[in-house]
Length: 133
Image 1 (cartoon, rainbow, N blue to C red):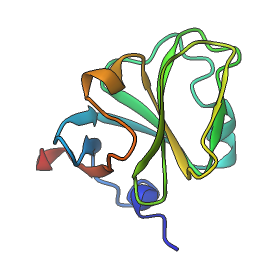
Image 2 (cartoon, rainbow, N blue to C red):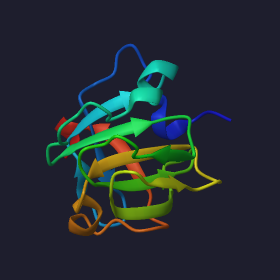
Image 3 (cartoon, rainbow, N blue to C red):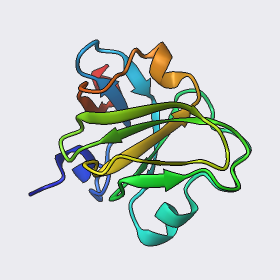
Image 4 (cartoon, rainbow, N blue to C red):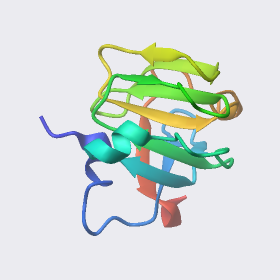
């Protein structure tokens, strides 16, 4: 099965993309940091002092992440291959582990982003060109 949600991120001709919640039309992230290969998946946001509002790291494939050694709390959206939100975790502090065993990818966001965008389990997130919003 093709991973439709992240397929645009791995394309060599990737346009400037954002993440939008299909249910309410809100932009969840206006800048995407893909972590699709082993090295970037392992490091994730480690070494970052913060994550600016509007930024998101998409880590795939994975169904679990940890916040060991992180310096700030984050929101997590675990999604399946179609971008459907399986589970959300709000304001996950450093030194925690989170998982959703049916997930294919996790989207890491600045703490508070999921609440502001009213993103919840069951929503479908989509990658779309910024010009399309």
